[in-house]
Length: 235
Image (cartoon, rainbow, N blue to C red):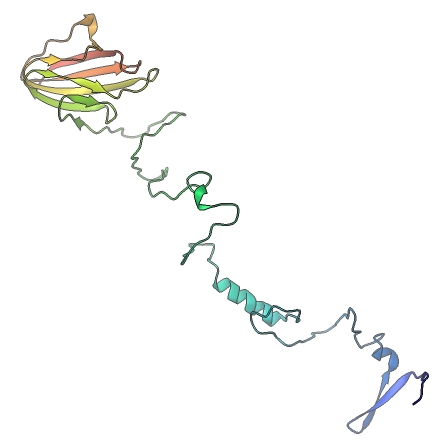
């Protein structure tokens, strides 16, 4: 066994019968051969393509990357008109409890400015309402003699005997509430709540067989209703 150094510049190897000279400096990485540490490739280097789903330190080819992107895209909802299946998970930072508080819940009755909307609860418009078009109010038929201001602002009633009306659910004091009663009067007398005040503190005299319109306004929570009448319309 010998120890020591051999000093050469070129190595010659047999390539199928012909000699090929290779510079030792090239083998050491100073020329056309890439070093093991931090190599820099030129041209179009190739490598084996790993199977889809591989998660190791193996080199990733462009074919592998494209396959991964295609597989990932197939499991993601599109940005336009997505269709979800299974269980949809809310991103971290939100929870189901946040729906209806910090996250608006879906509501098929949510107001849309360019479509007809039906509200099923009292709406408070602090900034006011500008109406350009018809304003409609349902005529509420009074079943007994109790007028509930929470149900509307226009009421209809036909009486054929002595009748005592009551009013309920006016708006809170400081808020104006008004309503109209269309009264078809066949016979009998009408008694109004003690809180109703007519001009000269005198209720109008009604002619039987006529229809009368009564308008009432309160701004103190129903403590007092100021009333006015347009009487004796022909039926």
